[in-house]
Picture 1: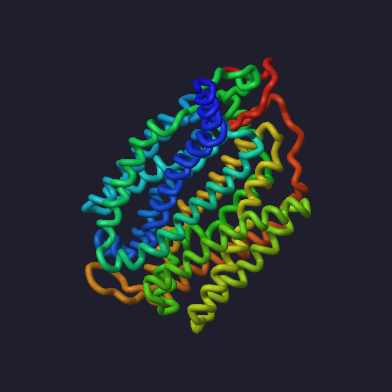
Picture 2 (picture 1 turned 120 degrees about the horizontal axis):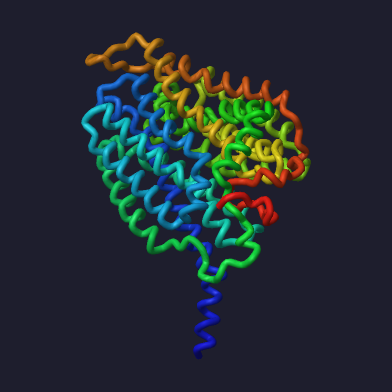
Length: 454
């Protein structure tokens, strides 16, 4: 009987527990996605509550990315040093404190502080799941958990937009934020009880040789990556090709569909959600095709060109029916699913042992769009509108939104052109350089003499 119980526990530890622990990490990533994308549903209410213009609303969005973006590089080192359990706890708690400040803010400045703390805390969410996967699951499951986490996060964002729009119209945005706050508090204090940083068994010799990157090694790796011209090109392409997500899906999309295509809040949220669902479906399919044909550049060029045409159709054909809009939005989202190829290009344009650092830098470049473009769109809205409704507030028309959001398809066109200058990697990374280890979640196995300082 004792042996039977031990076998049951062993089976749970090996088969169920790792996936359960990674799933808890995914919950935090879903929470992050909700916090990031929910302002798009609440734009009108937030602008009225804080008496702000579109430019200021874009600035409010910017503060999330100001914290989130630069943290993408040091996050890996923090996880390596302190482990996932308590880092995730403090990260989630930081996001919750930020949400508490944001939900109770009675001034624009205080709301910006709240959004900054939300971005700071949630910066650890995605990489946290990958850290847990790296120590609990075999390497053969790592890519699967990365793709699954992205899909689950985007699905949560799509569902939030789909169902929150009608609720906000009825009760306003604050009750929703208060519910989210309670969920965040429960999640924060559940994490230390539900997550273990690593399995109980002793670290074996191979694991002991997986050394986290020292600060000196990190700067050495960054020097190599930032002096690679292809990385700047990949970063610029990734940044502009991610504009449909950062500008439309996360911020202005629902307001645009309501103003330009005369949709209800629920219809606009449904169209926006379909774009996200298309992205979820397109990502793995395009990735499989890219791997199959051994090309990164060609799928990126073709899908981005199609996306540009579809977005121009949405912006400059205002008579589209709801069904036509839905189909176009889904296909555009599907084509946007090629965007993760930028991460593959970033990894493959650098030595193998810098793969994690290269991916982190690529992600930082991409997320910089959140710092620059929401405030820019807001500024363009304020410059173009002539409808003042009092107290310095404006009523933005279809023409205002079309003018301001034109930078999205223009950015896609720019990304398509820049993609012509990419170096094709044929799905192969450069030869490894033993002196430049990676900071990613599963550090490369190094020889003892090149491990560096721990």
